[in-house]
Image (tube, rainbow, N blue to C red; front, side, top):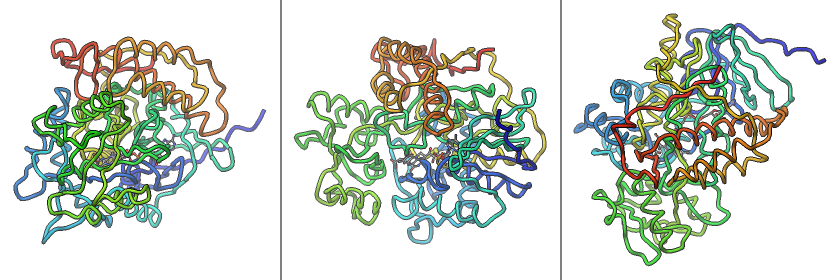
Length: 514
Ligand code: FAD
Ligand code: SIN
């Protein structure tokens, strides 16, 4: 028998993940004592790195947190937690100042910040950096501070288990992906910042690290998870055979770009009064209808006549990507189709980022704070990462401890425990059965397939662990989507196409059985 792994202790907190939520949490927590940051790939890899449009903050002269709140609530289709969303919008100005102090240089116009516009925002209120390279600019600034500061960083280290003493967080088990050795870290607090799960779908804007690990890890530790049926599909991902996942920012439509069909005709005006700036779920479904009618794999985004903006200057990252794929944004339409983009659900948290497990916090896309309801307002997620990372650290500093009160109406859930033969199997299954349009029949078929996957031994590899976590995520998502017999926000059921507030104006919460 091999020796048990040596424990590395003495940390005030362990942060899992190095996107915006993890980097910010680690920086803030490092004022409290030694902090360990573990991340499974390179320090800067994560969805944050690829964020384009920007970060919403109602700090412009004609804007207010109250208006931002109203837009957030409207987008969330009846399920936004208003108190949490108020915390989000009212903290925005301070968190933007924090980011600037950490070295993020937002683009400016005149004496103030430049504000972009995105769908379902009544005002232009989206701050951006380096044009459409907002995420890269933020990640670079925060990562530089982390690397030059007091945070201990372990890259290529996969968190594999939240360790508990009784039912309280005591540390983390992890796999050193370079040596293959198991490692144990001790700390009274663990901050989960593992991001979303877009890589669970065939078509996605997310990087490969987005496999929903945090949801499976927290669920196994006894935390409640919620809102997993609400997966946002971004209307405009680049779609060309052989091209890697790449987002074509909604901010382009905010500047006047329009969607066109195979014959060059605009079509969004037929689907919604806001036309190309309608909510994302409406645009995505309209595109699916047009694509099906034309037997096409894509529609076209025409960026040739923006509102006095040169697309190559305002969107240098998108222009460069398109150029590499033979498209000149100033003259050619861009082939686009919807793709999995953002998980509204995740590990259930309160206003201090606490989960229902003492000592376990969650923030960023892995958390379900309730601020997005059934559909996220564009550019609210970067804001959410820093607002709730900050509050989690404030709570840690207070020493108040405790945990979020459990939900009285949670459903006990025992995952079947199998794993798909490979990653592509789960991607195809979720894209087909739990994609933009769902039906009871497809969801039930998907669930039966997941439950039939055979048990798989956990190998000491990232791929093996991710397959097991993806199975848990897929089973939870399919179960929640099958249970919710209505259409709301990002969740659209062809067999229940209407919103049904009488039965379903409530969140579905799951906890581990037993
Ligand atoms: P991430 O940035 O995804 O980071 C997760 C981290 O966790 C990674 O470092 C990953 O390696 C690590 N990790 C995961 N599992 C493990 C494990 N088991 N062990 C160790 N480490 C682990 N939102 C906006 O508000 N505005 C935008 O303009 C915008 N544009 C976007 C564009 C794209 C292409 C995408 C994909 C998303 C965009 N979003 C945008 C959404 C937003 O970027 C994300 O919601 C946000 O960045 C998530 O940050 P995060 O820190 O929670 O997760
Ligand atoms: C985009 O730039 O279109 C993405 C913004 C977001 O997802 O918030």
